[in-house]
Length: 153
Image (tube, rainbow, N blue to C red; front, top):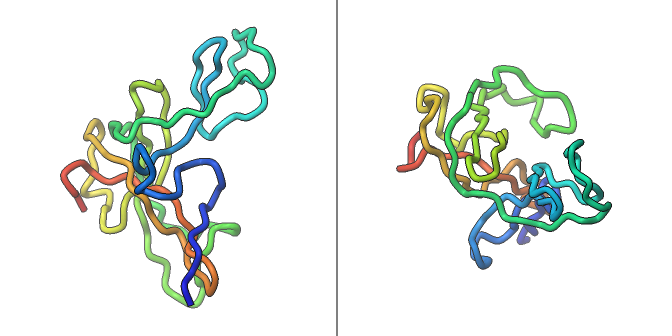
């Protein structure tokens, strides 16, 4: 049986890397002040200095590359809704905070599989890649990862 691909959170990233523009995180931009939001905002601008009208937001693809702003490793098993098998030993993974210069924001995500904290450094360039968070009998739950440019890990 073939599993269907489902995003962990609908509307946060393109589902198909082959789509025009490739795999991208999706944010929203206020037409009034130009502020960009991720996670996306679909109702009203969150910028307190903006006079934009409700619903004055447009979907925008975010940069595919950024620079490591900070990083750490997750050495504990997160609580639900994070999916993990309690019968299997916990395997730590790296978390990366990435600065997207054009959007003037920091986006958090897991490092690509095989990339640990020893492979990361503040200021290094990373790229967005599609990832898999979990698979069950019916679905492959997709997400995003950050991978050092040049392969890393």
